[in-house]
Image (cartoon, rainbow, N blue to C red; front, side):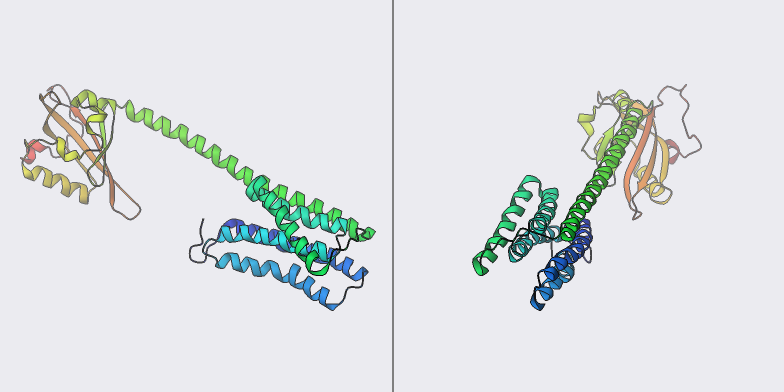
Length: 318
């Protein structure tokens, strides 16, 4: 989903929150290691810039991008490069390097699967190699008990946190699937009811095209769904009614949203029959007519009662 107006993909917000909290924890872990080894002011300035300022800057960058999600995917790879540099600059302390590696690799794996994990590993390696070639490779694997413990707790908390995020996403997908499944059952019931209605039924779009007909429609008119669906409803009218008949119909539908009456119609086999028809309108959220619902039946038999007989009929209109 691309950025529109001031909106951005929800994952950008999620990863901002995850990154900001994780980097804050890393600031204290690496800060303790830096303090124990007597690094200078420059190391502290870079530490603040990387772990306290950087998460907010790249969040702003993603929010400002045309495609916020793609920008966030680039941010994740940039994370891997930068923490690779930090691992090499700190001379690869095993628990710190492992913590940095696992965090960024998991982030990319969750979003891009195995491909994302591989790209994260390559980016991490590139960052470490870049520092090594520029400043030399040195290896000091040991960390203090305090730093090691903080790394263990940090990695555990991070994995649990990501697990909760994945679980929440899975639960949303599961609920959505359940809703769709239930919706499909309601639609199936509605479709079955529509198909088995005793009244012939025809659904027409707002611009006059026939969208759907039921089994009773075919029984009354002789036309199958293939004969009529997609064609203008006006093609199946006869010139047996005066022009005023259709004027009255259009006026009633436009102002009252309902019309009923009788008229002469012709079946597919050219035989004439007397039809009673009821038409209702359906409007969209803007108030425009989106569909017409037509219910009708053959009332040629004089013993048939005409539903809605209180409404004006075509015979009376003429």
